[in-house]
Image 1 (cartoon, rainbow, N blue to C red):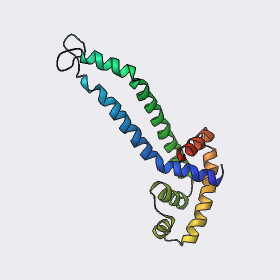
Image 2 (cartoon, rainbow, N blue to C red):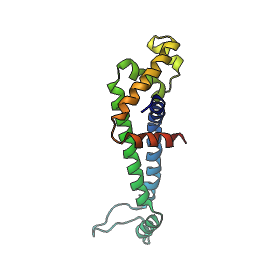
Image 3 (cartoon, rainbow, N blue to C red):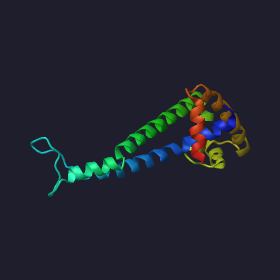
Image 4 (spheres, rainbow, N blue to C red):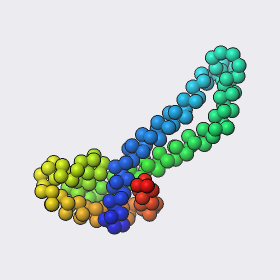
Amino acid sequence: MSGADAEIVMQYYGQIKAMRRILRKEREELESGYNTIHGTGMDGMPKAPGAGDVVGETATRLAEEGVADRLQELDVRDEVLRQDMEDIGRALRVLRDVYSQALTMHYRDRHKWREVAGIMKYSESHILRLRRRALEMLGEQLEEVPMSGELLARARDARA
């Protein structure tokens, strides 16, 4: 994987936490539709407060809206993001500390390169040279990740 591709993957890496937060929020909103179901009665049947078949109506409405399918889709997407974050993190950990630290501070922690240089006590020109080499080395490590092509495709899609 080229350095340019590794940079795309690092930009994606910096977005994964926010993407997972959005998925969790959508999941919570969908699950709130189930709040009319308040447990089971002594006969083992679900019950709801008040008169009528609120539980049945809610279950029918949720089924018609495809809520269960969407919840399952959200779970799959969250697991893919979790795995991507783990794979990228593992590739970063293989790099020398100075490389992984610089890339992490810029792409995940959102520091400007100038700030990264100051924190690491390097000149800005040195940190930019270090960045280029770090991305090349990361690209080599990402080649070892299972299904690295799919990872890169997801990273590119996240940019759109």
